[in-house]
Amino acid sequence: MTAPLPRRLLAEFLGSALLAALVIGSGIAAAELSPGNTGLQLLENAAATAAGLFAIILMFGPISGGHFNPVVSLVDAVFGGISPRHAAAYVPVQIAGCIAGAVLANLMFSLTAISISETDRATSGHFLSEIVATLGLLLVIFALARSGRVSTAPAAVGAYIGAAYWFTSSTSFANPAITLGRMFSDTFAGIAPASAPAFIGAQIVGAVVAIGAIRVLYPDVTPEEAAEVIVPRETVTR
Image (cartoon, rainbow, N blue to C red; front, side, top):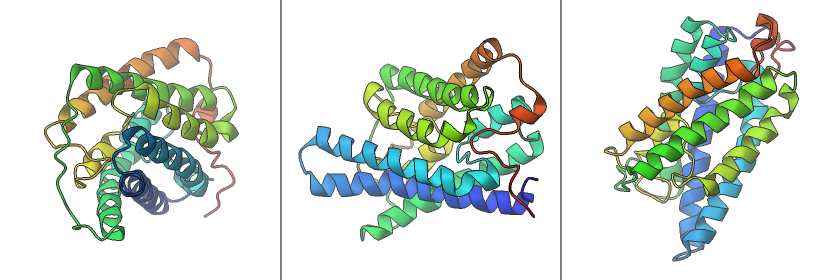
């Protein structure tokens, strides 16, 4: 049995808020602990994000599927894992959660609650990186879901994002909600509002490419198998 929609939305909000607080807060801590050493800052930020994402998916995955990402929810709806109506309900909650998490991260480090980022990231390399990062993330999730290996997905998603921090020039946002949330923190992990549309556009392109790739690579799957995206939900009771 799946959890009622209000409980699932609460899980998506809290998970998205923790994700944004994790990404931004670890970036702030890295900048403070390793001033002037960008490589070490990125390593610290990536390690914290990979480990924290693993834990967050384990926490909330059995309730909502552990999406925390509009493109994951929308692609899940395309493959029948959740209804389009529920996917549409997930998206604004994920965005609100990521913005709340950004504010929380700022406050935890005694910064202004909302500070609009001035970090410009809109280059052709960043655009391509976000396509690749989003494509890879969705392939990891749905390859495991559609091949009966969902129990490994929390670790796999955390590992992929940790690696993608390094092999993409954009540091792998791969998530429209976290992109919007990171605009509200003028810190190590921030992104200028002017750069956000290009990132979100690239993430949508990556999602469209991923849908085609998943259909070709994993064509044989039942609706029941498709319903389990990241963590099996059949053990959740009302």
